[in-house]
Image (cartoon, rainbow, N blue to C red; front, top):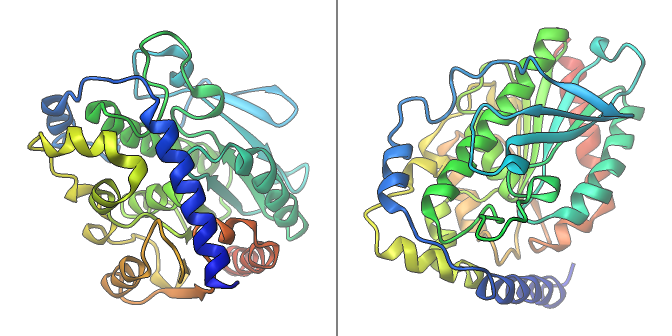
Length: 316
């Protein structure tokens, strides 16, 4: 797409997000608590277990209780949808989808479309709701209701909760099926996927679409992160532990796909290129898109579906 179009779209969404964040309720930074939590030896949830209480509440909708407890009950209930490709879904590969920040439209429309396409290639799809999104967004007065907030402690905790919830889902799938399991994450979900594949040995493949490679850079540069930036600048918290280039995938590097948007104003292509080098050059698709326009590209979705089908079925 033409850079004028893609960059204008990125600028529009960044401006809208900045306006929304400026109107959000202020919160204390709790920097000391954030430092202590990030220093936890089990921050990446290496002791994750399959949830024993996972239940289907209607059709393909499921829920289970998160192993990471926050003060808000709505956020502690992990919700998602399971799009199976056959009655005996256990006989086929599964991909877990992690959406982007505040990407409710993607969760409601884009990911179900992708899941149906994957089903035609005999691949199951699990679509998870990330903490502080969709039905997990608290609505009580004074509650944190956004994954990114001035409260550094809750933001770091949301990261850990996302990792824990996703790894628990991986364990649940692998306890029921011996077929390959992978991740497909976009933007915020791509960043989380990058962290998870550095610690979860039971994953077989992963797609990272415009992943946030360096959280500190996003906080320091993007307009909608201004409230977080003020809290972060006054703290002694370092988020370097959450940069993707400090981790290495545990799955075969040939089963990792990175998708770079060359005109991205959220995640500069230089950051993606650096990650690509640090990870010993996995497959990368350099695409003439911006951060937002990439999400609307049906040809890219279908191409990615074919890549996942090929990788997941070749593992059998």
